[in-house]
Length: 471
Image (cartoon, rainbow, N blue to C red):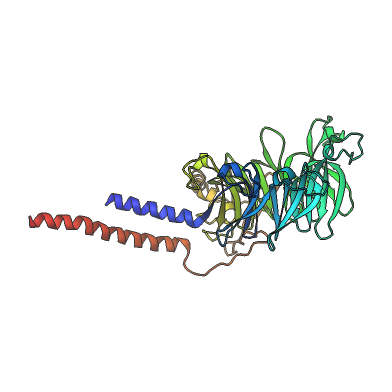
């Protein structure tokens, strides 16, 4: 009977975990995933899957493919490319002409690296004819960087041709704009372009620390054409539609920062992070090869047990790649050497107004998301914190809440006042269904499984006892 009870408990725990976070395995080999709506685009190396994906007669290219979450289908653009970016019905990426064996900018050679974009609606690829790398697409704009050495032109007029210059292309008008700002890895909204700049390239102390040895984040204002500094070191920023940029500083600690461009406000979170990506008020990142999500509004984060890299977040979905060396064979090809595209889809299991992938206690209601020791596990489900809270006498004075952002006095709420749910990210839509709560469903499920286990036990072991009596 003990074995049956243990089995039932295991099934219950597995069911609860599945309900908290749905993991979709696309089984597609790829890296650098990006997501918008139900579409995930990524790059696939032909050598990894042993196929000529762009029909050029070799298997040495990286090709842009995409996955539809609703249908589960993988589509191939048949275009060589890398570093994809997605917005609505367009994919932007960079393509080496030699890989596609095509002159993409009509200059009578096939030696250039060109920024392209692909329409998911009519399956057509369009060339911007602009040379560049690391494109970032948002609405009508594609931002990218162009090495001066490729064109033998001093774009920023600093007397050399050794810099990378930030440019952007407007899809509706096909207009190309040169910001004349030295930089790499641009991220764009419809008003600002944030990027990293080596002080050596600009020959300026951009963060006022007395030297010219740093890599500093700057931003270009599209309306005025001005370039300003955030005065913070940083690398590979991403930016939300509200023009909040997330990045990690260039130091051994890899601490997560975010910068509100319109307000010119820099915030240090003290959270270790790599590969941050932002949407609305949520920042997805990795910590020790596991997915995590930080909530800007609440200054809290949740660390999952899901292995992943290069996370990109959209509404309640995170697209990421997983190294099979950490998980085993995910695409059933008999080895564990691939990088596989997967998706984490979160719900709100404990009905506290917080999506599970950012809920530091997904099985316990904790709308305030308090996390005293800042370890990504909320106080409501952390045993040592629970014990401390039980031992504390009731407080009659206002409690002082301390965070990395500010210190303020929190007045105790009247017992009759209802706790307000957390505000959802602006593009989220959540529908709450009325019915029994989680604990009620848990008891119902436990009763059903226990009853079923008893019946099976009685059927199996009861028959044996009867047979012994007959003989």
